[in-house]
Length: 233
Image 1 (cartoon, rainbow, N blue to C red):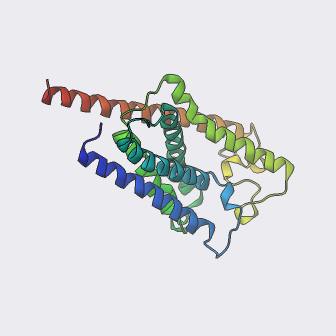
Image 2 (spheres, rainbow, N blue to C red):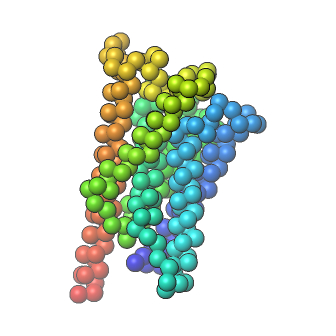
Image 3 (cartoon, rainbow, N blue to C red):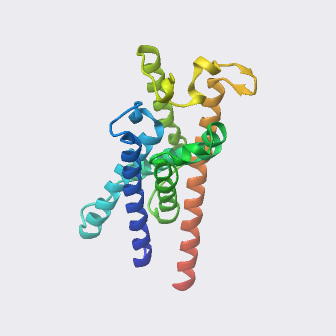
């Protein structure tokens, strides 16, 4: 159980995640006054929308759970929150570790960029690590964090093969590391690697993210449990 102060911080983080994810998404999509460049097809936007929805569910469901003896949030929903937190963590890491070095710092100045790449993801990460006390996770659960990025890549690939859809600056793919037209699939040349290797790297990164979130959350729970045992022997 969360203490009163922990509940306050937990709900503040929930609201920060919801508000900034939705506000940043709105700024990004309507930066020119109308929807453009197929913004809804970017993983950043999708991961922020999903994290806003799952945190909205938990914000309401936890209030209901406190007032009802018959309602309990299922472990499946907690696992979904864990998976979606992993997705928005990927957004956070790829932005600062891949996109900014490759494209330039100006991307951080784009409307909605700070909200969707930094504030909302960080709120979700901190909330899961420090205030998720009931999620039952296994090694198999950790591997589930790879599912959303894989589904995303499959959908984007199908759209690329079956339509003439383009993204910002008329690019055929939403992210440079998925652009098989330029990078190829298995090519390694001119300091660049093919899309196949990027998919492998990102899959490994997702596993690392999932394991790290799980490990840090478990460490926090163990620390709190030991502290309570010391106070109430």
